[in-house]
Length: 416
Image (tube, one colour):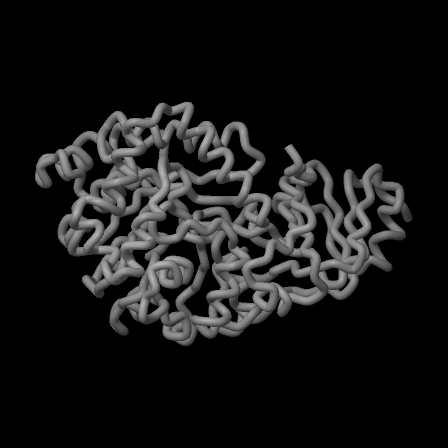
């Protein structure tokens, strides 16, 4: 019996389907990649239509108009990056030098650098300039295998500049092959030109209402130099009333209780989590709050420690990985490098790294039913890597192993 499809990809070394339960993966589930030796994928109308061994499927779909011989390479779902600050202006390489000379990230922030420096650059940049820069960055992300990405605002910190950023994020989603998920993060730090109370009141009374149609999520940076636990709670409760899904920057430099707050408020994720208590982890487990870990920031800031992934995994808290791509604390757009750091520095297994960078990352931005695994009905978001085994991803750290990116069944050309 023969059947028609739009595309068949066959003759893979391994096909990693990440098939499994329709929820974030925990415990032993994080070790299951759904691998098919010499697997094949059938694509029809931009979606996964069938999956199985090449020997079986090629007989059925050999008349497909497009055939792609994987040449014995590894095929897997496109990476999902659930935490980035991709829209920005200017670079902060000078701060990298200052940190190497002994200043801390928080010291630089207090002195008016850090996030404040990027805020000034974003405010003085036109929407067109921001868009063109972000488009280049998004191309780089996708060239390294990311097919779905979350992007936060938070470098505007004024009504006009935050809207400018969110409009750019909206336009990126409209014109770029990647799926872009928008997050309003007006509560990144307190802007230097605003009274603290007045600015927070603006977010709660006006900003959240103003941007509810431009952003799906609301995020707050809970830290002594940013927002207190009480302020974070007030903003997130207001955001929830407007229909935002919730995220929290929690425990990056200190344990202030924000990860526990995220769980208490039903946030989809708590992010960073270098410093959290056992009680907060228990709360996250009970609430199903996903831990998004960002080893790239720990690496670039030369942190003494990394997020303790084992604490979350051992407690059956779902774990995702993200780049935290931004101009100050992690100018890295490669999920492959993040996975290498997670394996080498956070002691996650290869399978756990892949699970965290695909299906769990998809659930961390409310896209687990659409992307993150190669299962019938999902978007055909696939990457072909120039390796034969998953173990070779961290082995070739710092190298782009992506040979081909397919988004929604369409091969993406990065030559332009």
